[in-house]
Length: 133
Image (cartoon, rainbow, N blue to C red; front, side, top):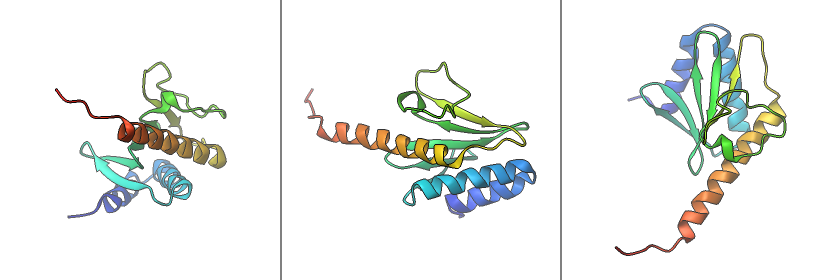
């Protein structure tokens, strides 16, 4: 059975157009921002990057590559990279169209902010005393 990373490799290769390059670049930036990132394959075909919870998913559509940050509404985006799902309570996304590029430094900062948020909520859950019913 292939690993999640191998399935993501296959997904990127199967796109066969500009979306391949875009998704591969964003994956590399995620890995640079967090060398300990965990790659997962969920929901029958979605690449997922996690560290103490989901950081983001990488979806590909006909006209865009979408990186959806699971808890994007709770992290600061000083560079204004989020351009989709802005009215939701939890998620925020970055839609990347053909010929568009995302600033690498700003994106890696966003990934690190998502990891920090995940870590802070994981730590808070660990400290919370368990109640008995």
